[in-house]
Length: 591
Image (cartoon, rainbow, N blue to C red; front, side, top):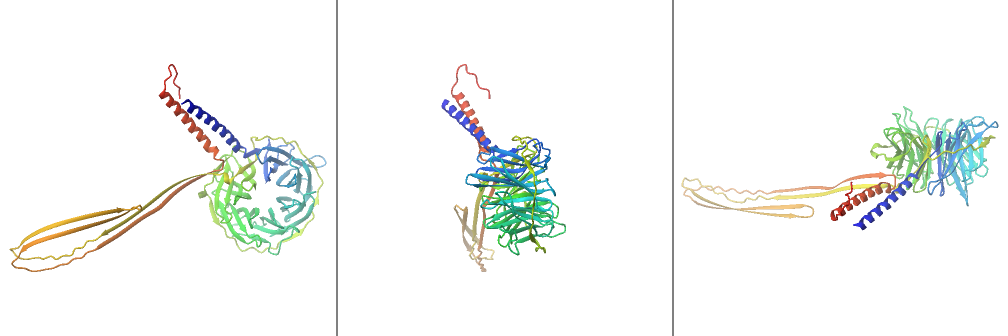
């Protein structure tokens, strides 16, 4: 008994240690960071070493919003460095600066980080801002450009050789497309383009080969997809654009938010407004050569969905944003099978009371890492029941007549002074802060309970009644009749593994009649009756399956249960031991 107790105690301590480690691992997969002011993350990029996150902060006490960059170590999610950037004039007055997107490129052992955003410094604000960093958050260069009136860059990608940045965004008179050298941040070329009008906006850009794919919204609030030559910045052919419109009235807002090229297809995540005014997630697949639409599906709940980013993870397309389905604003993740357009699963991240949203995401190949802002903590995943998601195939009208163009523009370089104000937030600080979170589909714990009932009943009933005989009726007063009847019944039953029962009943009747007749009248009747009944009832394979998904490692849920079981075993062992031996003078334990 003493050995058993020692083993149980040791095992309990071991499991307890594992619980601490497992919970710590779960907690570090989600980081909240910020300071006393509001901090909002807008862009994320992940490479083999680091997680890079950019946005804007009001925690530097500069009196304005400043662009920030945070870098975390990917291996253990530990903090590496942070920096805030403020663009000021000659007098030292700062302007509001915002970080929008980030990419990093490694050549040899050197990694450079590139951040785009906008600043309200200079004439005709807002203006395009680009900053180059090292992996210690040290500033290596910066540039400010006035492209065409008020400028808001949204999309960013980098060439495969790391020599150029490609930026897509919105300007006062048209959408814009830029090619910027990574060496000195000078502009190689700049294009102002329109699909349908002056209010067009380019929201996302990606590169595949020497082609640039862009999605966004036209001034008429229709979604567009366009393809450009990466060398020249002009449309890649006469039909290198598509506009997707739905019936009106009422006007239905449609916008492409993110674009990805993967597996020889183009995928777009966006939003679609219903006639009722509600807003849903829109998923599209297109042919990269013709931009012809191959698939378009919408997914929505009773609330409002707003989607900002799309990433390919483990063969699924993950769209992130926020939803109001559960009342408060929560992060939402939709996982779509890109081949069929069917929804695989959906999760929300929240606490049921505060507000949070995801604004960008990145893929490690097997995991999704996304970033955004929250004013609540701790947050936990919750399954969004697929029965609560309305999925529909959407149809579009023939494309409206448009007159697209892509023209060269000459941005104006603006002189400025860059400062890095004191930026010492904590992790976490209890107010409206930035955050990032991992989501790994391969680590999903799937608990499936299957109840299967197989019942096969086959009833074969054959009844044969055969009466063949002659009845002689004698009409005479002096008739004597002696009747003898013999009845024989035989029943046989056969049962197989299919529960098939065959029952046969045979009845033999023998009648012996002795009669004495003096006056006889003969009447003969022959009756033959055969009845065959075959009845088969089959109920096969009634299966009820209940499945639960958890977005955290199984140790989070199983280990506490194991600890409880061990505690129970320990208590039982003590009770058994007490029953076997009695030590004089030993006090009984109080349970």
